[in-house]
Image (cartoon, rainbow, N blue to C red; front, side, top):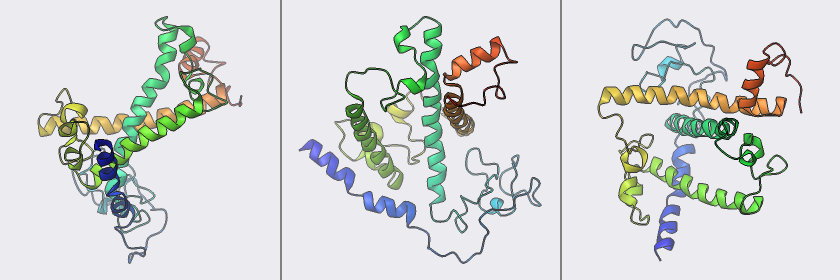
Length: 271
């Protein structure tokens, strides 16, 4: 009964959540905007907080006021414009999505390269020190034998991740709701701080970072900067694996050993 209550309460607000993300803005905007915002590197007026600007335009500065961490007015496609081309998606959801994807990318970037580094250092067995693209569960790239067949693992991962993501979506729509919904007696730890992007608590901030407003602001900025860098790193991993056929750490070692013959220009061939 507890599991049934957990699942049914988790599904209750699904439709409302989807409407909150995609249905809050009218289909037709009164203001006419081009698909691409013509941005200038030096806008006439510097609005919002005193901050450096990256190719900001007067239009992007009309809605990017510096209140978001890492906001430098850069939005050449107008995706965060509530009345422009990006208006069909809630701007708050886009900002939230960047934070979440940045966190996943930081974990992924470290996790993808760690087996290679630990293997080269002799800290883990050679059979587990594989490039990231050989440890997956989807053939033909994945070659490692896990405790179950690849398709069973894939379905299990989708089910578990889907459940976690659904609860996260509910918390974004109704902050604090996960602290009221039964979850094996641990629900108090998921009550959150009122800001879904930074829930805090014993599970998400066990060391108590950001105890004052100034330090919290600095940590938020560092997080979004590193998250953006990690998302680019993950993209680089994909391209390097496709082009060179080896992992990112081996790419680095090859380049350091012979930079003339191992660089981006000499590696432009597909394996």
